[in-house]
Length: 297
Length: 339
Image (cartoon, each protein chain N blue to C red):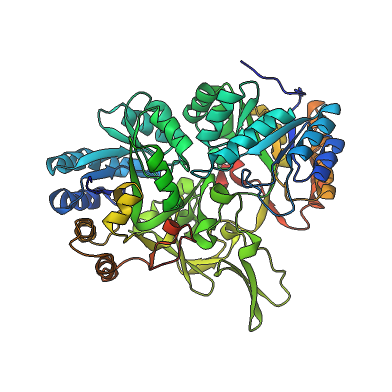
């Protein structure tokens, strides 16, 4: 039985170049993850600010023994968005495709497929395998039973499950950070940088519900998959994806590594995660095909 | 290879919703160049009770439409469930057997199957595929022979015009009816609250998960237990569509994502024509035949007048304002200020 790997997904948030630099330096030195996805996946307007961080981040992560994967933007619209995809796809590194535009540019070279790309079944997965897909992290709403079916039909790829972090639920042409601050996307003043984990969106009667991050809408809750390694393996899961937040992600990845190595059980992992200053309540409903906000023991 | 439809109008083609056989007849009789519909199951993105077609109804609908020179497009535009892809491929087989003019699809598995097994049928890329760049659209054209793309409702007219200069396939845009605020096919908000979503089950904010709860002098409209909007006594209570609710963010209460508005781009028809659009799509397969008939007539008049070099904006606006029941309208992302 091969070990289940851990990966750190791309950060969704508008973190400064300095913040990214510090964040990934710690990941490189201390986090027990084998793969790290990096790059701006939400808004092309942030690229001029964080672009300068990436060469050093890549170098640092590779020095720390991590496999670095370059993630492409989820909803390319502008020339800048499209150019960023073309540039990344030409690089001699593994690329995570988050839109069909990137798939077109990556023809013939191996690629990973991320959760913004709609793969819901084994037929779509096979179509992508024929074009070079080596691993798949499907959309977050896909139940584990469907992922297991895909994994069984496509043993040549690694299937990855979105295991930790606010759930990426939607993208839009409109910027909700700008709208909440009575600005427009074209003159947004980059105010999404004020919320390191997204801007809380509550209901009229103050239920915690969603979180806005520029053009992206996330869950308020934090996905926390705490299933034991044996059960994950039985469902064809080959890698868990931890999605970056401003909390101590080294600690989060250490806790998951301990669970995967059977040093702690599901209950202990849950308890350790709950002890962290999480941005929202724990949730895992999607895994069982239920509403995503639910927590099921 | 270019697969022709039954009727290729020289004007902008009006693509009209047919949620039921009665609505199909109403749309055809009102002057639709083309109608679109889906099967009565989870293979299409309007999987609501009492809507859609059986195979026999589709066959009869195609006959009725073709006799009057109207095209029929059939949507198989949800994402097939793992292990049950056969339900979706059977829908493709049935469409081919019924003699419809094109399949509207988004799932790579469905597109791949249609190309391999029914190469004689036109493929249209559903808005659920959210293809907005020349790279993505050309990929679908080159890989699956897609001949038309329904554009996501996140693009401005300027962007659509530039896009049309870089692609060889036809473009179809929504001009009237419900408005998705999030990029279509990339939204799981509904399943987060209810477990059901457009991509998974062909529904959004489903009625079975809605409740209206009176608390004090307020009425709360909820979806999956989450309060989507609240109304004072005397205020008319709207349907709790998740992305059109009132929420608290940044210390304020607002319609954060979008006001409860519907799309009306009738005023932009001349501009859309100049941008090189092939077809105009009207949303509303859940609508009754009277509504369909009036909206189709209004838009048919508008495209005919536009074709004759005139401008029917005033008349069309008057005809359509009756249809939105006093509700508010927007031109959405077609004007860049929306973003």
